Length: 152
View: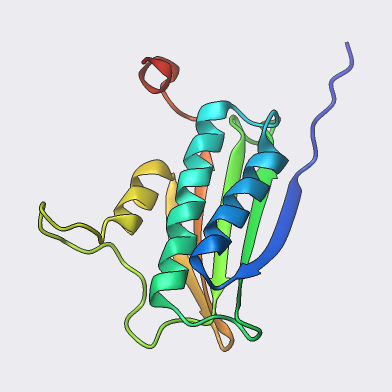
């Protein structure tokens, strides 16, 4: 029997620092990973990416040229890891306010839950800063309860 491990793959897309950028990013991620990962993992990765891009548009400055850089990486399950892993990363010019964090918000608030959603759907997430801006990233894996996620 011959076993072939799929190689890690990565993508990077530059999108406008504008709400339409989230749609572009979601479409590209979906097109690249459809069929490569379980549909539930893809749905979670798309939701997380949408939240991170939305936060970058609402709360951060753009990178030079009025853009945001969106990247994702697929590490397929192999002998080293048990489940497919998708990492999404959104890089912007940073915000003048505090670092992105989960906030306590009233139950009747109409927004402010983005990073709570990211934390709930991902295995881990974080923020990296350098002299050029900040990247907010999240790592998601295929470790989910199929019955709970796929039942109507």
